[in-house]
Amino acid sequence: MKKFLLLVLTIVISTDPAFAAPKPLQVKKIEIVASAPNAEGMVMSGKNLITFSNNVASNSNIVVSAVDTNGISQWIRTIDSGSDEIATVATVDSLGNIWLGGSSAPAISSDSPTVVTGIENPDGVIQEQLPKIRPDMTQLSLWKISPSGELLATYISPQESPGLVNAISANSSGVSIVGQLGNRPFLLSVSTLGVFGKLIFLGSEKTQANTLVRGADGSVNVFGSSAEKLAGKNLVGKRDGFLMKVSKSGSIASVVRSSAPKANRSWLAADPTLTLTGFVKSGKVVETAFTKFNSTFVPTWTVRFPSLGISYVSVSGNTTYGALNSNSAIKGLTGWRPNASSLLVLSFDSKGVLTGGFGSFELTTPIALVSSRESGVFGLAAATDKSVSIFRVSTR
Image 1 (cartoon, helix red, strand yellow):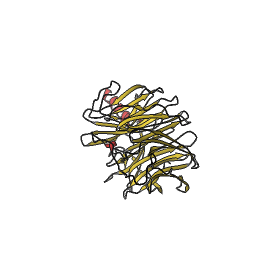
Image 2 (cartoon, one colour; image 1 turned 180 degrees about the vertical axis):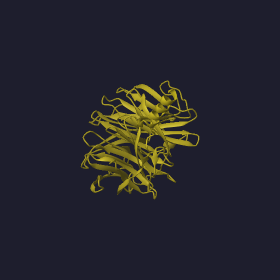
Image 3 (cartoon, rainbow, N blue to C red; image 1 turned 90 degrees about the horizontal axis):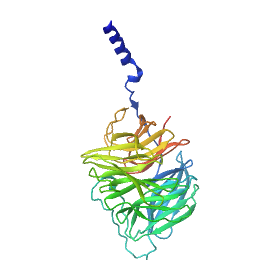
Image 4 (tube, one colour; image 1 turned 30 degrees about the vertical axis):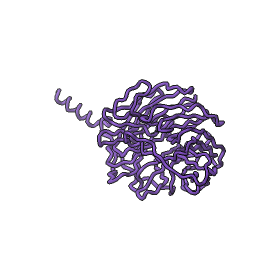
């Protein structure tokens, strides 16, 4: 009798759907919406996808373009003050205004030579592959553009060293940017009326500020990587990722390190919901991590996937979307075995469970990822021929 009951119990357990392995997810093909020549970033304003690029002619200027979700051109705007300006980041505020962040040069004589310089990279980690900047680009600059393409304002903060803006975040209380200024990581905020706050340095040249999320109260969460002690928190790996909370007054309120022994870690991109993505490089193994944090930087879920290290994240409703340059099969996905770097977008539910995969062997490296409940999920990515395209993720 006992053997019979044990057999019945075994059959019940083994056939219970709650104990069944999840079915593999079939990867869906990503749709290319439009070509976006030379585009370096993208945001969504209403139902328009906004890209920006930098045009070098007699002087450097910025070209901003808007297409609808079907790829039809809506407007094009060139920002040209007569001096040189370069945009490196973009965001959108709650009113749909587009904010560009970058650097500009004071007016100079036409026969002045053009020289470029790079940001130092003593550790040789992935996210340090930064664009080159000119030593005369000493003005940190912000451009505010209306949803219809009208240049509303230009805000300039002169500095003594050339700067590179890595990320920007805007809300109803103002705009904040982070980047490297004279090789040191900085944070700078400005009010909606264009009044700049105090420039705050967040470490030495051993720290990289990659992305940020601005709080409604004017505080700022900054994320990146560091190979030095920060706010009393010691280095654990070769280079650690960090999460830093900076108060409205500019003081560092807290720092949390994301570490792995003998590894390089970094946070590269963040969604306003504090869902982050970055890489973990241990030896020759590189993985992309997607992690959801609460307001005190405690992780609620985290997942990792093999990749080449570049990734972006966007949250729509209860679904998280992550884009990465994938170079191998992914457990739980079928129809995905790339032979080289290929674009892969993954979706996760509110608990971090993988719910979908969307891929393209034509596209390689993600440049941006945006989403909205009304319009869907879109991104910007480089192609195998080095062109740039806007793509759509079909979530139906």
